[in-house]
Each structure stands twice: as C-alpha cells, then as structure tokens.
Length: 263
Image (cartoon, rainbow, N blue to C red; front, side, top):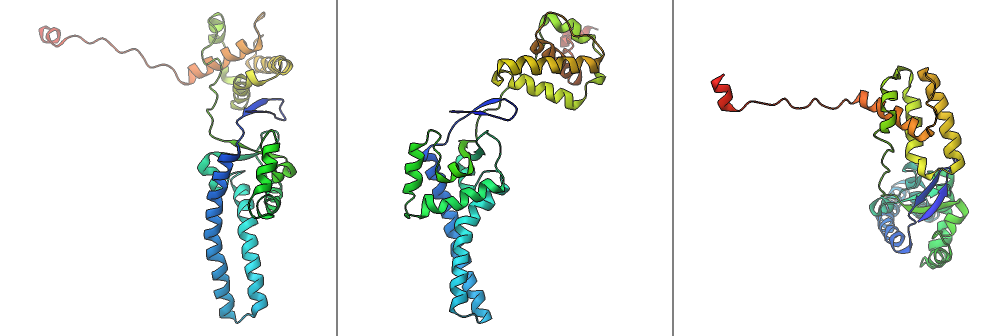
C-alpha cells in the first residue's frame, strides 16, 4: 500500500502493483502487440506492392509499423482508458499520477517513449525490472519520468458514513425544510462524510464548519450548538435520504383462513 495526497488534501491509500502482476500484464499486452504487428507489417507490404513502391518505401513501412505497435499501442490505449491497457484491464491494474489522479496524453506518451529504454534497450526488460526493484513504489524509468505509479484498480468502494443520523439529532433534522438543499451541495456533503477519515484534522474541522454554515444558510436554520460538523451533516444527509426513499409500510396482519370463513 502507498499513501497518495490529492490536490484536495485527501490522503488515499492504493495498493501498488508489483513486478509479477505487471509482468503478466506486460506479456498479455505483448501478445496483442505481436498480433497487431502480424497484421500491420504484411498488410503494409501488400499495399505498397499494389502501388509498385520500391524497397526504401517498404523498409519505411516496416519501421512505421513497428513503432506504431511498440509505442502507439500503449500510448493510445492508456490515453483512451485513462491508464489501462488490455493487459492491465485483465489484471485489474491502472496507471495513475503521483497524486492518485488519472493520467492524460502527456503521461502516456512519456511512458510509451521510455518503454524503449525499459523493455527494448536490452531486449529483455531487465532495465524495467532492476529499476522497479530499486523503487519503493515499483516505478520503472517511464513511471519516474512521467510521475506515475501503477496500482491495483479493483478495490472495495468506501461505504457512505453516517447513513443513520445520531439519535440526539433526529428530532432537529425532521423539522428541517430540505427543499433549499441542492443536489450539488448534498453531493459535497456526502463526499465529506465518505472522505472524513482520510482528511487531516485541520481539514476535517475547517471544511466541516464551512459545509455546516453553508447548509444551514440554505436551509435557513441556525446550526445546533455543541455538536461537531460530522454529526450535523450526517443528520441532514440521512434525513434527506429518508425522505427521498421512505421505508415501506409494515405488512398488514392477515386473518387465518378459518377466521375469514366464519366471518
């Protein structure tokens, strides 16, 4: 596990992908690249043969096809899927930035170009293995240059905090007029509750107080005194959820068949 600090001062723990898993993903991607190469190289030669191209054009086509397969494939796939090639998808891996966010085209290009050094300079991938072993986050040269990390993407999502309001705030919450609470503000409150345990104490207090003042101003009610922001926001959000999804009515008791017959 590695700790990432996002731009919102949120600490996120993500499991780092180590060499065995990444090697398996690389072999799967390599198989896809070989298939693409078996299609591109002969196909380009056939097309150039139809056009009557000379040997220089044929050699150029081979080089372009190889570069497209070796560099274009990882760059294109990781850009379109925000950090996941076919091999990484199969193994549940993803490339993320140093702060845990999704990568973009710049990161993918840097990793793709550096892959020439990592995997193809010696033809064995030895450089990538050695550099990953020396890195605490298993970064290869491409990751170090792009500022990225490969992590396991299949992890359990956190449950929303305070799904049930504190008993001592239920009466206060049920008297609120929640029509002034917009969906955007409710989403911000939910994110705060979910990420509460990952926030620093200062951010917990400052962000919580700001949200409480904003929510109570929208609801046109003063915040209850003596309660931390976590409880107040949890009570408001739980009451909103209770009104949006009311519990089903209790089942009505039925009389036995012989009682209905007598009636």
